[in-house]
Image 1 (cartoon, helix red, strand yellow):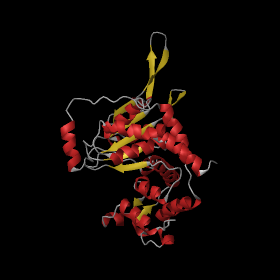
Image 2: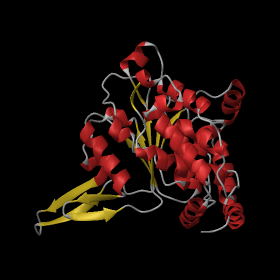
Image 3: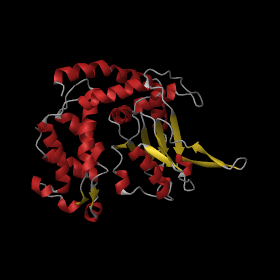
Image 4: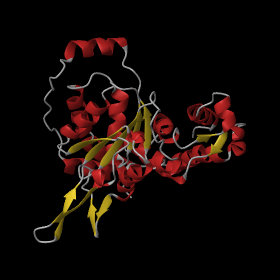
Length: 327
């Protein structure tokens, strides 16, 4: 195990690539710092993102810009009700000339995937994508193909049009490391957007980082030190979603299901990536609190009583963070 000073030196050497990626992305995008930072956390922590936001908030542009900046292949998949699993992972093509089959790979064989409006496709298609996310491989016919690293999926959901959608089951949503809620830009940011953006004109973006450097940065993130007290803090937060009474929280009637064990794993690893972005080789309680809402908001399932009272999972998570003592 490396000491904190050594890890911090490694973090400072490798965190320069984050600054280069961020600077490159900002040439195309005004604002949306929160979304871009979470994209980088997902990339460094080897996790996937679920993003909820109205149309026109530069979600597609953000993830494509990150892919361009790190010189990786980007693929956007528009989810529709008539989509089939083969449209995502690929299929076997029969050749009548010699009676053989050849593999036609689907769009999943890219490094960074944008699954646009994932809730518009039926469950079978959603499962095909989510299996690839979990296993990092797909099976076509009798052959299994590993997906190239780095591999990250950013799926989007439109919160205002629910007609003709197929909501993601909680067990599948749990596979996303982070769930983001993206809001409108500020007035000043929107003014700058109006001045900078010319419809139909794409801002060129040269690669500033190679995929191998991202994979090396991931290895450094895994070395970021997490003190035993921080681990206990993470466990207290997660267990408070399952047994709130033990922590003096009178919210048990508002929670149908607490966060799964993935919450503890992802919260620790996302906190490491958050510390890495700030040039530190160790995790602080603030790292956990900063990223905690994004890790937990989709893992705490509220009861009918909470819904009737207009209490969201975010309200419950915030109460937990306010109540659990910070080490």
